[in-house]
Length: 358
Image 1: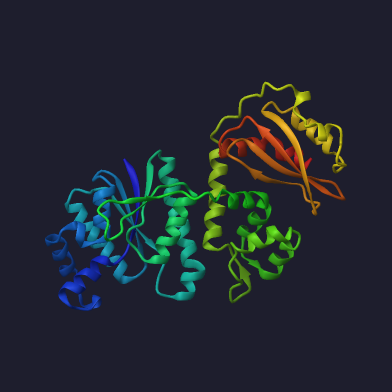
Image 2: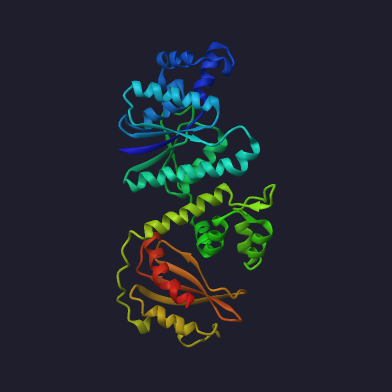
């Protein structure tokens, strides 16, 4: 059994109103039911059209509908129709997306993101395949639903009105955004802890490199009427993805030991201090080299900052850190035997970060 998260629009109401030549508000529930009973389900609604081609009657179907009268009416009538056709594992969940523009922009989309991630996480914990059916719903809803699917690597199915079969939207290579949140994790933990005033947020942003600061500003909302700053809906997706990766990291095993001798793991440029690295660089590298899973430690370019931190955690087991003293900072690449984001993150958190912060 799989879980199919289905964004639900009002195509049912629109189609009935068009056929009866009435306004949507004038269409009755009885007319909606009669239309569904007599119509071809492929043509009746976007939801029935897509589900018949994506899911089976025994799958878990979750209809995500907007907090509007029309949205709720359509979701409930489609649920009623499908249950009569033998679809008995259907659940409705309301999205707090109403008609208030200000609430929609600042809070509604963030709530949509959190509900989607909650349902994805719940299904994955129960070892069920998850599919997002983004055929129904309105454009902004579908856009952010698609973004969640791409970042959380959940297949997104979509059927255009002229298509006979669904297409699957590909996952985008945007993991660099997640690494940015890992790099400045303490800032995002602070921001997410409680509402923060613009002046306090700006004070923390000043300590960052300008290039990093500009990227972070892209996933923050402008201050609201009371001067508070929150993550944007896209930022919320990325921050929740970080949390999910940390949860997965607790479930994986430590990486296997490397067969490379400790003395051979450190690059000559570091061992011989050829580039006047920050103080303590060699000592830090020597501690890293004693970790079983470490295979190679390489120095890199310098940066105008004095902050030590993890900069990137890659699927291939590579960890990039910034080592600094009171005068300068140097990028270092640590190659390990870890594989996959979760295992690499686990090794980084358990062994590399403590050494970096010691």
